[in-house]
Image (cartoon, rainbow, N blue to C red; front, top):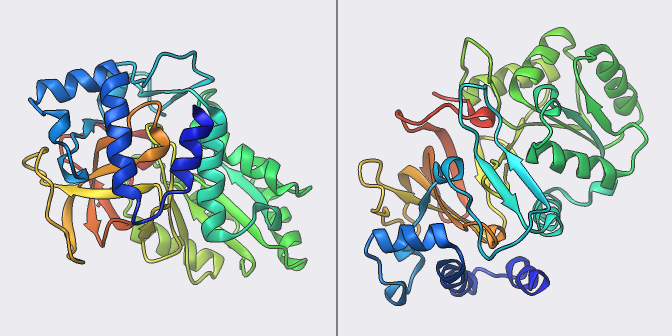
Length: 331
């Protein structure tokens, strides 16, 4: 069954997306007790849900208070959100790590090409200390798939990282430096190295810092330090098995099995009409079909601009939302 869903999810096209999303909705309504109870509590008749705009989106906070699973299974992994001990962490029960791997590898390689062409350097110090980080799992897979002798994780050994980058730059090796924002800022301040053959990609993450910083300000500092024209970004979270990427200017692109809808900030059940190429500003509702065994329809706390169902700009969070580990960039 996992293979059957996998073929459907990663083979979905723009024209077949809505049909598959509605199929996943019916599957999750029938096989996910928490989601069914949520839909029923809203008074929604599942047989009347005939478009993605009519699908109820589960508030992301449910991942902190409930076990969100579609069908009964023994999880191959339980990913937890980052955070301090004062915060209740989200938990994502993953039925198939293979499905997650297919999602993040296909999503990355569709934009950036084969990982085997890269040396992958992971600067994720705080996340490496957490045993159940989906981000660390993803980057570790990137490192393994790159199969480059210099690929690996770096904690706070910035001098070693700097020497490695200088060596790779001299060899004109295509490199991916993927790190949390605060670590990239610290590294850039201590080792401002020109990077011509390296993609610098931030994953958010200002947790534990007294001063917050906008994404635009962060990118300006990094571009200056690394003499780079663009800084890339990754948008992901514990509750999703898919990621969106920005190759610059803060505009993110979704893979074909993921879409963004915008809801009214004051009315969480009202979807903003963004048909026919219209843009919108509001809170994000995310459809992630890779979440087929948890919940594919999530109402997040993120706010931004919407440029069609595959493109968006992240601006911040709803004012009353709790600070979350890997997305603590605000305006």
